[in-house]
Image (cartoon, rainbow, N blue to C red):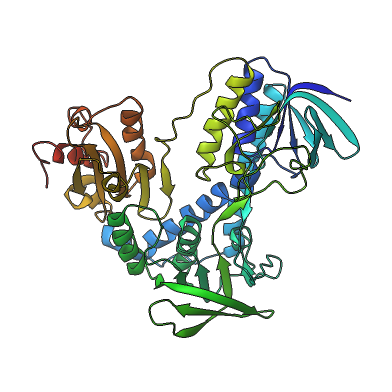
Length: 464
């Protein structure tokens, strides 16, 4: 029976990052993971493979729609779906193999198998029980479905995000249930491949909870790319056979009932914390009403020596949020001070254009009664964006009306997911819009649009 300073259950972004930091801080560390490869959902069947497919199909879109405009003429490329999936799998393999190398480099033990926690300080894997001074639950999340809808990824007709990455062929018609991040990213992939994609959403706006200006602009741009939307629709059920499916839904506005035919139905209705089989409740660990592990400000549960991070606990289900918590809990276990600023966690949608946000929305701040000012700048005024047919979208910054301190941002446009971090750094250190506006930005770059939006919060943007 092996003994460790810390055993981390789960090797996703939260778990493996926490393990590396624990090892760097001198703790004897092990990670329990039952998959054949490390990296969790994100690296194996989530963030990384979906970005590979988004990248491949973005190049296809450019070849079909923009190459000729630049004088690059010739036959449009044909799609070899199996080769595209092989490219995706190779990207996954490189990344998961990289994590295994980091484990060896940092002398982290990988205990292969599925864990349970019979008691504080004990982790059972198979027939073996390992002892640890501390246990960190980093088991992540799994796709959630709607009542009465059965997902069968092997059959390939009614699938979740995992199944959508492995379809045997590109479908002619796809219905996506849910207009959140996952549904729109994967819907974009298949729309670029020629699939007729219809998105059915219960709410009246896509990407619920996001900035209203982004929601409106984003939906229009996706519609221009061929995605169709049915908003305010409550899905009643899905009937499937071996090759087809029917999605029945009811419109909230008039209670009328409708049916959509599809070759594939992608159920993208969010995710839920995954703690099945761990025995945490039996060990006395408390949960929230939504099935998440309850933790305090230091990621500790009510049971001494048991901690939890990432998708398993309350908060946005984002890989980088889990990573931050993984590093912070490692600091706590090493007797240091771990910290996560939950007010500065960016979110990104990797469509084209990309969408990125951080901080609070304009609506949320107004609801709080905050006095704010808003600065916007369109990418149509950005020379670099126009040169690459990316003039759609904008940068929106929100600042306190009295102090000029930045409170939130939303970007819809090229490289939004990278540019948002300029605002993250500014917000982390209490920066103002003027701080950003007075910082020299290289020309021509997309990031000039961020500076222009900051200038708009003062005396005015230059190129607006």
